[in-house]
Image 1 (spheres, rainbow, N blue to C red):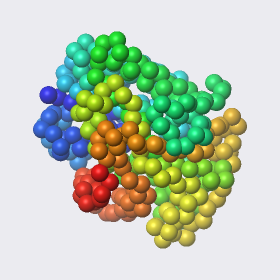
Image 2 (cartoon, rainbow, N blue to C red):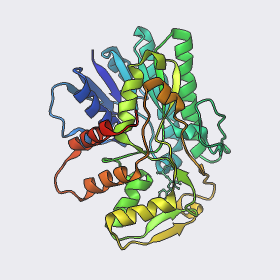
Image 3 (tube, protein in one colour):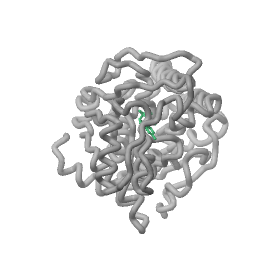
Length: 341
Ligand code: UDP
């Protein structure tokens, strides 16, 4: 049974492809237009079980051709990064709306199970932390493009649940909380690769706002393991899950820790949001997942371990050799010893 991973050349997608190839005997098709992903992310994989297809999920025919060849679909192709979404609102909205509808419509033909990668952005700027899956979302005005991304992802979730209700399609929605790890680029504004690159270059770490805002950072290795386990679990079908490690960190503390771990002389520079993004920019202040549902369904949930995440990202950027394949393996063996389950 072949597995389709849309967005498989991206940061999370490529780790998922690694995981699926090592944990199953199946073949994997990657459908990706390489708009934000890169072939480099999969270059270490030398196997005839992997097929790459260059295609855009906004094209219904391209998607249908790929879905028909698959027994399971992980739909990760989406617009990524706050900077990208704010700068390219139309393409972001269309990729998220049309891409997801195309995948679900094609999957409904044969009842092919679909994992939909959603985002903690769907909670918007709610301050009611920790967020549980049935909590209310709070969005800002339509003039701030960021909330377009949040509502597009929320609409994707509505669509997935509606296909489940109408066609009995086995779908699982996973809301990723600030997933981080090797291969993530700072190009689209993500904070950890940005801070690590700044610290290693001896530049100021640009903390936006007053730095008291929090995020719950989650290791990509945990995220892909959960993604795989959820779609394989019938109890999860038709359900929405937070995928994240609880224990929020302030951006000020994050910056300090990056400076310590890189042994850098860099300093912290606070940059007003309107300078970093734009005048009408808004962002969530606090973000933390409630993982009760995840733990009840899978028997475990990820533990917050910021140092492990930072060390993996720093090691990737400072090592001479390409050790991409070993990152997740190292993490898995660490976690097997942990009592998180
Ligand atoms: N951030 C920052 N400096 C940067 C990039 C991001 O202080 O160079 C902040 C950003 O304002 C947010 C947090 O770090 O409060 C996480 O940002 P990211 O874009 O990684 O994720 P998201 O905003 O989607 O949670």
